[in-house]
Length: 174
Image 1 (spheres, rainbow, N blue to C red):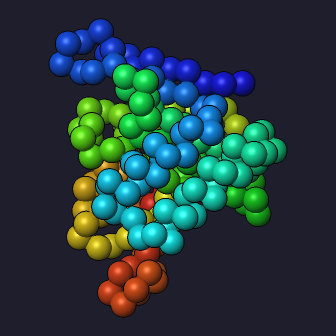
Image 2 (cartoon, rainbow, N blue to C red):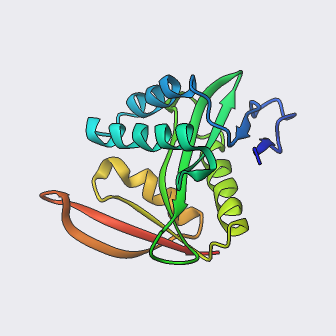
C-alpha cells in the first residue's frame, strides 16, 4: 500500500511543507540522480548502485526486496531513503541510502525519512536496523545524524572502502 505522509509541521511558516511517499515513479530517476550528485558525497559507482536499487524497485514493485521513501517539496523530489530486509537474517533490515538535497538539509527531511523508514521496518517485522557509512571526515555530520537518532556504532572495518577509509556499521534496536 502506498505511503503518503504530510510533514507534521507543514503549517508552520518557518518549516516548508514536504510530503513523504513510497511509490516510485519513472520520473523520480533523474531527481534521485540529482540529489545524489549534488550532495558531493557519493562516487559514481555508489550512485550507480543506488540507481540499480531504484530500477529494481520500480520494475518489480512489491516483489523487489528494496523499499524506497521519497520526500517531495513543491512537487519536486528533494530526498529519499532506501532500505530492505536482510535475506539471511530474519527480523533484520539494512538502511542502504538516505540523502537529502543540500539546499533543503537541516529542515528535518532526513529525520522524517528515517523515522518513516523505521516505522515501515517495524511494521514489516523488523527488530534491528543496520547502517554502514564511511569514516571519512566528509561523513562526520552523517555519523552525528545516526547518533542523534539512537544508532550506535557496533563495528569498524579498517580500510574497507580505501586505504584509511573505514567501514563503520551502526545498529538500532526497534
